Structures are given as structure tokens and as C-alpha cells.
Amino acid sequence: MGDNAKFSINGENYEYPVLTGTEGPDVVDIRKLYGQTGAFTYDPGFTSTASCESELTFIDGSEGVLLHRGYPIEQLAENSSFMEVAHLLLRGELPTADEFSDFNNTITRHTMVHEQLRGFYQGFRRDAHPMAIMCGVVGALSAFYHDSTDINDPAQRMIASHRLVAKMPTIAAMAYKYSIGQPFVYPDNDLSYTGNFLRMTFGVPAEEYEVNPAIEKAMDRIFILHADHEQNASTSTVRLAGSSGANPFACIAAGIACLWGPAHGGANEAALNMLHEIGHPDRIPEYIKRAKDKDDPFRLMGFGHRVYKNYDPRASVMQETVREVFETLKVKDPVFEVALQLEEMALNDPYFIDKKLFPNVDFYSGIILSAIGFPTSMFTVLFALARTVGWVAQWNEMISDPGQRIGRPRQLYTGPTKRDYVPIDKR
Ligand code: CMC
Image (cartoon, rainbow, N blue to C red; front, side):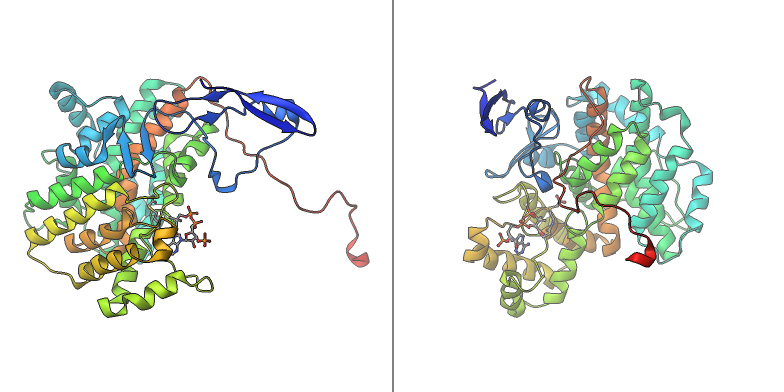
């Protein structure tokens, strides 16, 4: 703990403890501020507010650092697997070989969904956005798995977490299959987490599906890059929903709803659409000009970040992965050239330099996903699938915290003061 922070309001002086974490800025503990002063703090968008204590993920936005339980994301992306990272986030440490095999088996045993859940899909229009299906179906899990909804029982919490991580690929693949009118493919528990997902998505019952190891590796890396990201909007949504005691399936459905927005998980879809719209490097200056124009709502999608004021470390791994996937599939996509040149031009433009706007994880991910064969509408679904690990880990951490209370922000009220009701004929 550092020196106390001194605060003066209406001529009275107050002191609040300054807490120091293992990394990152100190935080001023203002929990007693309202009780002592009668004043709230005002911080829309939580730009200066730490909403919780967490041991999971650390980001240093100015240095472009992202750590999961201390391990740099670049090292995890290079050497680890998504299942290992899931273990790290959920259980606290990288697994030993035995722990890994045990964890992997547990997740594998939960990959099937209740047969009746399949009926839910038929209720959606064929052209429903898969994120709409995800919100509905994941929320509906709470109606099927009553034996893992007691949030006060740590064992039930862990079973619900395993179920969510394990079933998400099945649910996501089914959303895709439904949209293209193909039969659902049951999970194959002999495959890896990611290999199984690729088979359920791109395989058909009429023939054998062979998982391409290079694509499996690239996809697994994309999942690692999206596994957790500290207290972002969807994670904070999951925590806020969970703070009322809501069951985990409902909380994760709330996170999916938040992730859907174009400023969050929807940005990779928007980024690829933008790159296609630009179409040719010659048109880049026109779009850069638009992005800088205050009167034009257009923004460079996949650029800028609330926390990173430097290169998003996930974006560099993603750019490298694009090259690997293109090499494996022996494809070329002119959109990649547009992206590379757009990045270079923006990074040399004073507007982007001054505002510290760099490519984020979404700038390149759409290019890879589309090369693998996913339609743009599935991009955010893949993000949700991977982020489920982070969401359940954060949710577990919150529920296990003895100091946890229902989240209840306050407000600066600017509406009318008290006034009397006027009957309709007198208004
Ligand atoms: N293109 C042009 N200008 C931008 C952009 C952009 N992509 N991003 C921010 N700015 C400008 C913005 O206009 C503002 O200018 P001014 O100070 O003159 O008003 C300044 O930079 C600061 O932006 P902000 O909107 O106040 O910053 P924020 O922290 O509230 O927003 C953001 C962060 C990610 C929502 C925003 O950068 C953005 O809309 N980016 C495009 C969408 C995107 O790529 N989102 C994916 C985020 S990463 C994935 C995830 O974690 O979900």
C-alpha cells in the first residue's frame, strides 16, 4: 500500500488508501467515499475505475503487453494450446501432463448438447444472425443443466464452467450448419478441441472429414488470442450479471449479447467488410481521410483500443498467422495487401500517431477466418467461443471472492426535479 490519497470536498479533507497490485497502476480505494462525503465519483465508460481485484489477466496498454497469469500472450500463442490456456485461466496454473490429460478428458466428455436443445434451432429463421442464435441457445442451457446452477457450490460452478467451454464449439457449429441448411454433425471426442470444432463446422455426415493440422493450429492460436482480455465490456457484463447471483449460463448469454456490438467483438466482421469496401490500395487515402473527418462517423475498423496505446500484441501474432494460413492453403487474398498498406499508411499519419491508434486483434483476424472458410457472420461467434473461457474464469473468480457484492453503479442525475402530476386535459 502506498501513501493515502488526499481528497477535499466542501471544505472537508478526507484520506483514502492507495492499493498496489503486482503490476499496473495503483488504485485509490474509494469504497468509503460516499458514506463519508455524500459524493459519488463520475466515470462514464469506466476509463479510470477498477471494478474488481483480479489475478487472471494483465494488460500494459502503453507497452503493448498482455499477460495471462503472468505468461506473455506471444509465448502462449507460440508454444501452448487453447486447452492449456483454458486450464491456466480456470485453474490458475499451466497443467502438468497428468493434469492436462485429466482436464482435456473432462472437457471432451461434455461436448454433446442435450438432444432436445437441437429443437431450439428450428425455431430460428434460416437467415438469423448466428450471434442471435448463440444468445438464445446459450441462455437456454440453464433450462437443461439444473444440476450445475447452484452458484454457491464450487463443484457445480466448475461443472457449469466445463460445460460452457465444452459445449460452445458444438453450439457454434450447429448455428453455422443451421444457417446453410446442412445437418448437424455430432462431436468426435477423439479429436482435439479445435479439430473437433472444425469437423463439426465443415464436415458432413456423408463423408470423412480430415482435419488439416496447419489450419487446426492456426485456429487454436486464434482461440488463444481471444481467450481473455481483462475487464473489457463483455467480461464486465458477465461479472455484473453474475453479481446478482444469476446462473452461469444466463451470465455468459449476457456476455455474448455485449460482445456482439461493432465496437467490441463485432469489429472483426466490420474490419473485413471495410477492407473489401476499400478493395484496392489506391483507395486507402480516401478512407484514411474519412476516418480523420470529425463530421464523418466512419472509423477505421480494427484500429484503436481503449487500453492499448501501442501495437496490440495480439495483432502481430495474427498478422504472422495470416501468412502461415495463406501459405498452407496456397491462397492469396488482395484484401491482405490492402490491410498491410492501410496499416503502414495509418501508422505514418499524424492523426493516428497523435491519438496512439494502432491495429488491434480484429484488424487481421477476419482475413484468416475468411481464408479458412468462415462467413463474416461467424466471426464474432468464434470470438465468443474462445472468450467463454475468460468469462467463466472471471465469473468463478468473482463468485469465490468473499468481498463480492451486487454491482450497482450510481449516477449524476440531470433530469427534472420533483414536480406534480398534471391531468391529461390540463397539459
Ligand atoms: N478510426 C478513427 N479515429 C478513431 C478510431 C478509429 N478506429 N478509434 C478512435 N479514434 C479517435 C476518436 O475519434 C477520438 O478522437 P477525438 O479525441 O478527437 O474525439 C480518439 O481517437 C479516442 O477515441 P475514443 O472513441 O474516445 O476511444 P475509446 O477508448 O472510447 O474507443 C474503440 C476505443 C476500440 C471503441 C475505438 O478505437 C473504435 O471505435 N475502434 C474501431 C472499432 C474496433 O476496432 N473495435 C475493436 C476493439 S479490440 C477488440 C475487443 O477488445 O473487443
